[in-house]
Image (cartoon, rainbow, N blue to C red; front, side, top):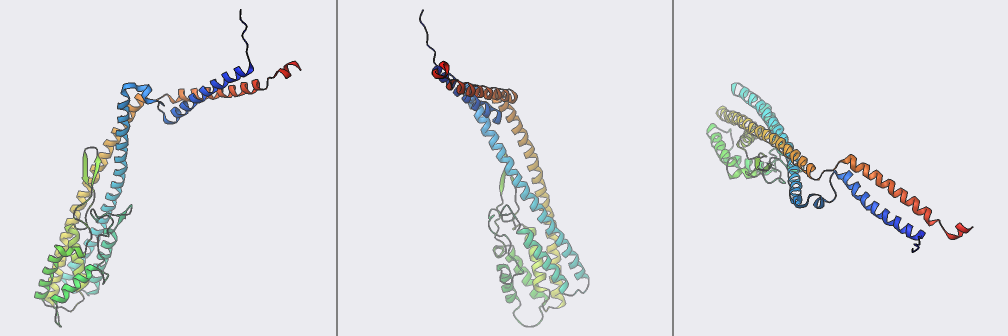
Amino acid sequence: MKAMSVSSNAISQALRLQMARAQAEMIKAEKEVTTGQVVDRGLHLGVRTGHSVSLDRDIARLENIKGTNGIVMSRLDATQDALGETREVASQMLGMLTTMLNGALEPAVPRTQARTVIETMNAVINTTVNGDYIFAGTNTDVRPLADFTDPASTARVAFETLATTSFPGPGAIDGAQMTTFLADLETQMFGAGWDDWSGATDATIQSRIALGETAQTSVSANEAGLRKLAMASAIVFGLVDRDMDADARRVLTEKAVELTSAAIGDVTSVQSQVGLVQGRVTQANDRVSLQVDLFTRTQIDMVGVDEFEAGTRLTSLLAQIETSYTLTARIQQLSLLKFIS
């Protein structure tokens, strides 16, 4: 029979090896407790690993769409509020213009009301969300509407240039001159001359609101209703206090009433379209959320772990490591001198 020698160093090394294994297992257990998933997906799933990775990609893509939809809804809400404010001041001006048609009204009153419309449009049409101008079309970094109350603005300069050409001589403006001016201004504002007023593009933003669905999620300052209201407020603000005969004043007021009334209808129609898009985004977001939940549950079924079991295993491993440290410390204190003393 051969005698086997046992040394404290051999025992210490064995404990150290066991402790290293326990530490490796503890790291895995910590990751499983934190993520709720197995550490080595490939080892756990084998040939089904590709399907699990594909699910991760689909979930990330859907979550990105949900995040984008949140931004889209913020932009649509701001658009709806801006259009509502614009329609409200337009209705107030229409009431004032109707009164002006039916009787005498000091020029300062309609001019003040027109200024309110212009300032409101400047404020709400030039609204930004997350740093982007929401009425600028695809030129989201460009201020969409020029400030007509500023004498140096391109819109005001173009207006005054046309007015100077249309009303060249001294004396009161007559009805024929006013009719010609308004026709030329309308051609300008509904043609290439609108570029002096707006930096927006006709093209609007298209957003993907679901995996297979897109929607128009912005409104351009170039909408016909906004042009009409801009023209109506401009002619009242820019001309009503000038010297003109009764016929010219009637032509001016009737045109302003026509434009404002049409603008209110057009803006209301755009609001309805925006409301429909808001509904579509909400429904799409609900569908995306359901898809995320479904894919997540499928992923959990494939690679999920029992967090309670993983936590219990982690606690057990910690206890083993602490025991190993204690035993190692005691063994290292053993020596022949202590034994024989």
